[in-house]
Length: 336
Image 1 (cartoon, rainbow, N blue to C red):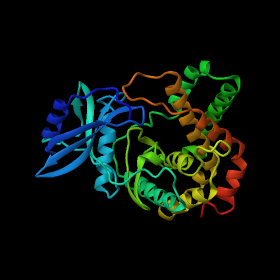
Image 2: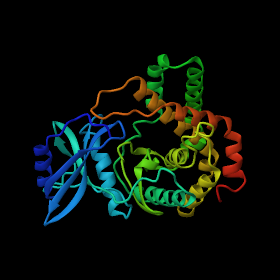
Image 3: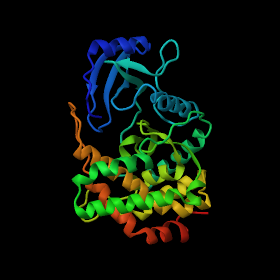
Image 4: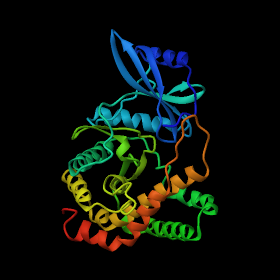
């Protein structure tokens, strides 16, 4: 992640000691995302070195963070491979670094698979469904903070930075998503804690073996279908190629959907609204990337994502909505 907050070695070492994790050997800033400050912290205990991740939260406050940390703890204790927050001697998971909220979690093994195969997509679909089922017993409630209310608030903020065609697209899609949110089928969607940001760089693999999901700091209570759609929109589309960037990859999508449904079959309402939620997931990330691109914050290591990728994803999802409905639902792509 970007480094907004410089953490002194001494302060990090004191926190790791307080958590009984060991003595700090190395502290390295992590470059990548844009929401929080993250460091790899290598500690030594009883002659063995272990890596942890120290996160300093830049936007989320002390009142919001217990939801995320306790959700991760809940999922870890229910067999889902996620980073487990470290507690102090009185059981607190949320700590303070440089006057800001912070957490320390174990570093997952493996690496991110940025060019996933059908097998990788199957593994992600299977574990995502298991995560949704495990989360049903989690008692805390917090809305998805980047859901529809945030879209309604943020679109007017980015509009002055858009071309006429972009402005027309984002206004049209926002109106459509507000319409969808009022449908009976939308109200019937199964809900619970969702990751809401399960991109390829938030999953670890060792070869074809899934090692874990991480970066839960966009999580919240939302529809499971939205979470699945966000995941499909990153794992099951083409990336990078100028002629194909943002296009749907049906074999990977079919594999992820089939694996997901083998664990948690979609309801009729979910089958009906999958194309709409694919559009919703594209809008959410186009909008957040527009916001970060045009209204950046200063950081020691900051590289905002190009928003045009998800603009292309949204255009493709809108253009192919009928084709998607047929290929993913009516013709058996989503097994009953």
